[in-house]
Length: 335
Image (cartoon, rainbow, N blue to C red; front, top):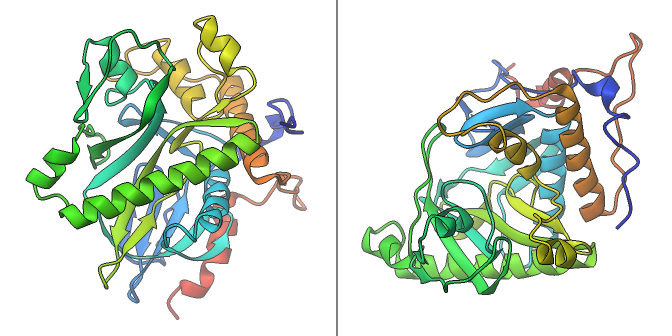
């Protein structure tokens, strides 16, 4: 796996180049998600703008330069690489931070596919396993598993879809059906497609020197009732990527894997406080820039393309991302 040309030092001039929010008053029906701004158009499409916010532990932690662009462009790469497995909601990409999508009726569950005993959040199987749980998500786990160990088989761990500031809750397949969250046919379709998407992601990641340890999928239904892949896919925010070449040695030593995902920020925070109860300490600028470099590194690793930093304008600074986005979406403004 090649090293990125862009490290934290190279990103120092871009420390203030962030998109913490993207409110555009000319666009209708604004809704703020955890990391995306949403606008519903009258024709049934939705504008999704990926900000640079990092959301974990049911709160926003920071804004990372270029994070929204990286997530959008990685998701675009994966949507194109998996279109033969499941149709997705993307209809246009007018800007590096923006997708225009088909508006869907979202399934009321999120699907996390896991190959390893990993994670740091309240709904992760490692957190619950350490607390003594041996039956999680309707699945029985044996004693004696070690943190970050490969599971005997790939598993599905669905959760409820919580709003911002609320907690996701674990679900088993039987509970999903008993509560009527999905029909048996819908659950079978989602399960099969999630496993197929994960297998494709695992294979491609391995070819780039990465382990896809786990990932989250969100699905919805279009007006014809067809299952559509939504949100994002195999990005550093929705997935856990590890460096494959050092995993065996680090696992044998009881050390955590080298990761390329937002665990970089999550781990920094959780090492300094209880993020569910305590006030999160200010994250240093250097840590923010290292996180930005990590996002860029995984973009370059997965896509095989160099990440282009924005050029300075006449005043010596790049055009602010919100101004660039407004220009790209001006064709949707009234009048």
